Amino acid sequence: MINKRNIGSWGEEIGVDFLQKQGLKIREKNFRCRIGEVDIIAEEDEYLVFVEVKYRKDLSHGYPREAVNYYKQKTISKVALWYIKKYNLWNRPCRFDVLEILGSNSNLKMTLIKNAFYAN
Image (cartoon, rainbow, N blue to C red):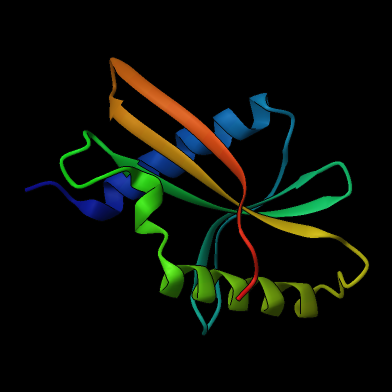
């Protein structure tokens, strides 16, 4: 049986590498609070970027991005607000991205969807 947590950790690690190659500076990985969790918090220029990483080996259950539904977006938005309050980052513009990983080790396709959604 495949461990979903291991797959998620693997996806987030390759996601960090991908984002760094795109020029983003990683602030936090797997940021958790009582409200929920955000996979990656990064910075790009003046932006504070909250990134949800989604992986699927194939399209049998749809695109990975489709798993970031309204309820997931709402949770990420709340965690982002908590993070901004905690670190007093009110002066920073922020955005919500989805990093979609599709395929297997030998043939991965990674797509960064910037501004994938707005705070709910």
